[in-house]
View 1 (cartoon, one colour):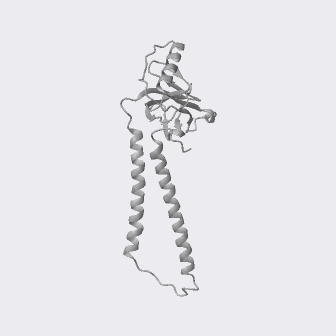
View 2: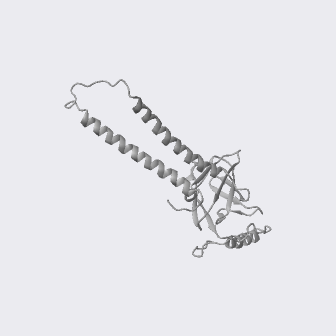
View 3: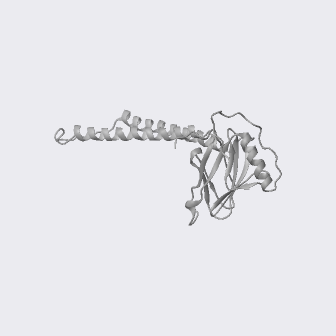
Length: 225
């Protein structure tokens, strides 16, 4: 759950932990305050209650502190959303087609696969279309999700920073076999991707042209074919 498989993970997880931590602090504060008031202002200690007409400092405190905290959450969320919406100009483009109940990935030379192959440290742009009903492409390890709607072209992108095989799911109920609409995104180094791309292009009778220039990757990384 907490793997750093894409460039979006750090900011997304930071927002999550900030909100969870803040909620925990507020919850504890409310419970402690409630217990204090129940004990301190019980009928035994205060048989004759008195009304409080107003307290400007208290009213400003419970207004300004939540405002600052919520604006902080908004800024963190907006910052992450801005990154997700800003697709790099040099991203590799893959066309993604959703249908009941499978995903199809088409590369620039027309090669089509049912598994998404990506390259580490390389931005990938996914142009999303649906052939039938509403779907939603979700890669949990990358912290990205985008609806795929018939008659509408949506775009999402990511940059993987760890090699591996990661689940792709449909996060929108799309029919009887919705739960089986799973596939993988396989992240590998540039040379391994080019070897795979050349082989699948030859197999499908498509013209092969290298999409990428080889880039260095960690020596201890595993290879996925």
